[in-house]
Image 1 (cartoon, rainbow, N blue to C red):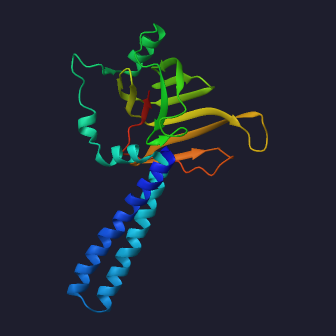
Image 2 (tube, rainbow, N blue to C red):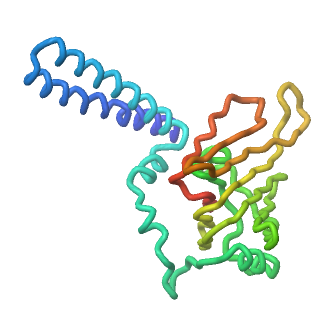
Image 3 (cartoon, helix red, strand yellow):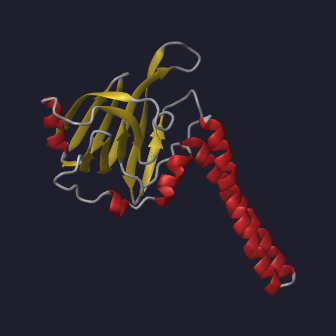
Length: 228
């Protein structure tokens, strides 16, 4: 059912740029009823088709709910300082690790999203947090999850924790390590995804070999969000 909804929503969202381009093309041709007006209209239509295809792919990959959340979200409002009575708490990496060692961290498990890139299907593949450690000398936080999954976060800055979400707003680099069946065999093998912030962009790398996977990471996204 969810796939059908995303398919229909993706088609509708993908068609919208073409509709807008068509309206502008009519206005332009009314003013330029010559070959230049036609060329501009064709260029607008081609651009709208390309944008529509990208929107359709994004909806199929992330789901319409997540796509709309990214479109309408306001990072400044989303990352306001938690109030005293709020269930959301502001942490440092060291504080979060210390709370975990005492089993007092309030967020326990969820689905990983790194710089906007999901680990598995959106809001699926929930993993339980087994341990959190922080190395002050390296400025590196390590989160160990169930299913032989681990995240290394270099220079994590500002962490928000609630019972439903754990969020690291920024980081210099994140490495996701996990296990998956090796291509052509039933034996598990170790794989990774690297996300490194370089010159206001996120450079990515992976050794995944069983699927052609585009790492959909962006600098405007929070470094790490784990949804329960």
